[in-house]
Length: 471
Image 1 (cartoon, rainbow, N blue to C red):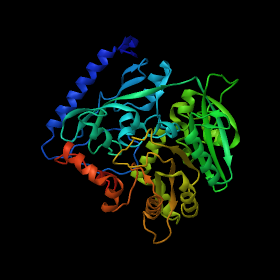
Image 2 (cartoon, rainbow, N blue to C red):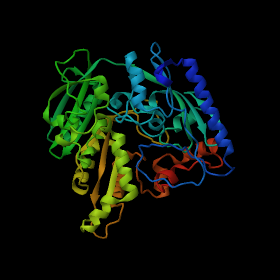
Image 3 (cartoon, one colour):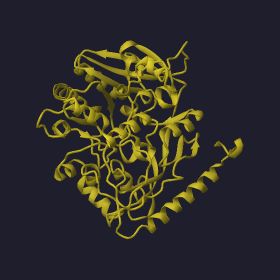
Image 4 (tube, helix red, strand yellow):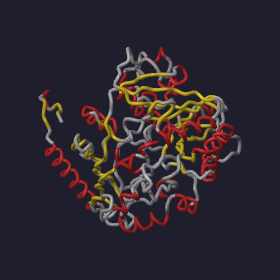
């Protein structure tokens, strides 16, 4: 790795130097943990997040994650990367692409961290063939809730922690370092946008593509989609390509990617542009900030057209409530944030969207088929049938509440519907489950065993307290 040092001097940082620096950062973290009074809660003092639930202050200093981001090594021959847990996928991909490699699953937003995607549920358009981000982890070095540093590998002493880490959201420990598999890339991704007049047609095609990994005689390496409404939905099928197009579209400054899905049938993007196609507009959520209007977009520096900028603006509004106060003064109804990702079996996607279209006025929504990477892929805190194709449905907006309607009415309806359809929902946002419902859905018995083994004194929040009570 080459970095700019003081006074513009270029400094080469060796792999050994990066590992030594990581060892020092890890030792500092252990010392910070030891300095927290016994029985006091422990938390990681992250400055940024991609979560959408509130977090109450604990009154105790958090563990400083400084020095816990960066790529230690990319082994091109073995197709692996040794990466620190706070490393963003933007930084990780920047290190792997020069080797002609990328992670098996690259979540859509540049500032999602590797540790966050593994302790949460990282998904993208390779998930129909590569599962979720945690399924390509070969080694996890974690600081557990009782202050130990452990290394978990498949079949090793801490195999149970490795399997239970996904969907634990930092309640069993923190991912400090991960070794992950990589896959070869090509310079371009050729896209084919297929329009369907019903979700039933799309579901049939998504199931076939997930099983066969081809469509109409073309190989399929990437698959996701967009539902604009009951009679307009799309699957975007991508394949690796070495062929350079005459021109490529800049979906940061010149155009908005999701609008191209409706306008084009074919497209070709350089690999990095494809991986970050959703980031410049936070899918389509940048609409509320007006930056999709060409006259506005042209005047905004490129560095501000990215998801983390919009996230900060949204968090500012949550803290200060300026728009909410403006709406109240004008007699507009209260609104409920409905920011969720759910998975349902592909055969039941139509049932979900039928109710969603009728009861939750949000469009468009993102669709992403996924399958477990192999028949042995069982993750106890997010149990899914490894032989089943699911579709992730992502929707991120707010809806008006009728007078007297419960403030979580739509989120609760979605939770009940997903459970009825044999699905699950991610826990990065608000949840309304009762405690019994929650633990029955998210592996309560397995979680209790892991909590006792790795955080017996409850120094970290338990999963229900963090995901539902937002403590």
